[in-house]
Length: 356
Ligand SMILES: *Cc1c(COP(=O)(O)O)cnc(C)c1O
Image 1 (cartoon, rainbow, N blue to C red):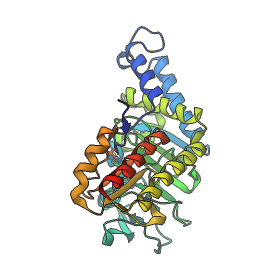
Image 2: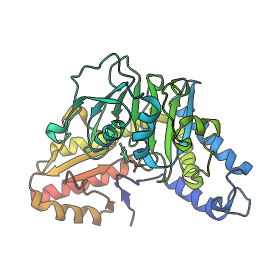
Image 3: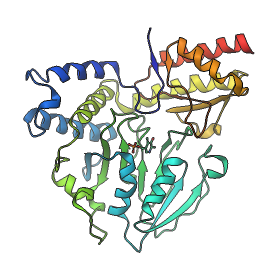
């Protein structure tokens, strides 16, 4: 039976990318060797790294002063690495708290400088994006989480400010066009929308680095990785390869503008069924709804198990909501075709016919 993958992360990858990866795991580029057993310094892998970097810059239309890195340690390591590299001991940074991930980013940044939590939606279990806030003009940067994977809210646009932005785009990178030059740094764990778990994407304005005067351990200094082209130590070869193939897939399918169109269609289809169907209710304020993670519930929570069982029979996997929210979460990243959403919507309609 065909499966529709709604997992939040690690998450769906394009079928063609998985097939190509399977081939390269046995025989990479006709070398007669697996991609997993060749040197990262081989010309074949250096070609993969170069291609991954150039595709990322091209897809996001990044100016020349931006460097692309593929690191390890997850987006979670960027919570401290960003502050360690960009925020001086006596300096201040502004943070918008829109969920568990921003909360963790705030906690880590506090080790390195003064953190101003300028707005938070914690009062309503993060079901909206706060819009009223003031930023101290002295702030070195404003950190925001562009898409809140767990709660299903998303900044429809980057926050309006002249302060340079730092963004955690783990769950919506390459899902829509972004204005890179307003950001000093963008980071993303690969495993939501750009590849498998194991590498972390960083795009950084190199001119913004080297301005804090603390000692930074070699591996945690962005300069190290820029100077060595993400090969100061052995990079996560396979995750970078699969991320490269996924970026190539995005490009072949019309780039981030086409992805945005597709993601808008999919999410509108699903949200309109949630709004129409009397059994279900959306979890977050309508204007802040995420196009990546659609969070919803049943009015009658006693029917949850049954709805999950029926959706599973239709091939829908990964629908239970995050344990801190409950209900359902349909993650509909780039690689999810509209067909998957149509199947889910049909299940919801059928559930209404039988339980309404
Ligand atoms: C998943 C996620 C993270 C954590 O990523 P790791 O790579 O597991 O550290 C951080 N931020 C957001 C927005 C996420 O969705």
